[in-house]
Length: 214
Ligand code: PRP
Ligand code: URA
Image (cartoon, rainbow, N blue to C red; front, side, top):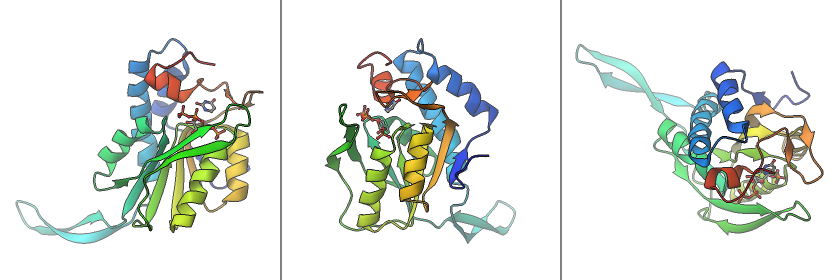
């Protein structure tokens, strides 16, 4: 149990096992990307469990039965660059979803998010939006992304992270208590550089081989 009713930390043993591989500083980018994808599948399964369906007739070889099809129009919003590694798994889960890319990076000095790319259409076209980003640290990037989506007209927003810091969960929950947060782990704290401890280092660098873990 945590202080945040909107926070869902996965308890699945497969998630806990894969997280250990992801955190390990010896895990190479290729393996790291594979595990990001696998964890995204597992978290997506949990985060999308309340998506709405509608009844349809399904002709089995023996008779027509009442089956279901997805009714919600779903949008995935990966935060560049680290969120890119989560997209394929989410699209495998929900192949008809739309994907809008949002580019945000953290200014290393102020830790504030800077928006540099936005591929959202003019107005909201979905019932449910999922923001995808492996790391929730100060919460600045997630809060900025939620604000962009709300201005755009999104009504139901969920945030999916692999690892969250309490500071980030508190910031998002305070500003946007209506946003449900799904993550694989809630870590201890941020360090003085805004990195999640124990965390996994820089999720973008570790996926794309652009630097060492911090
Ligand atoms: C990382 C991460 C989040 C952000 C989290 O991105 O993917 O977007 O930091 O930090 P916050 O909660 O303090 O805002 P980064 O800025 O390193 O960009 P990158 O994905 O391009 O490496
Ligand atoms: N972004 C990352 O990639 N890692 C952290 O620990 C914090 C922000």
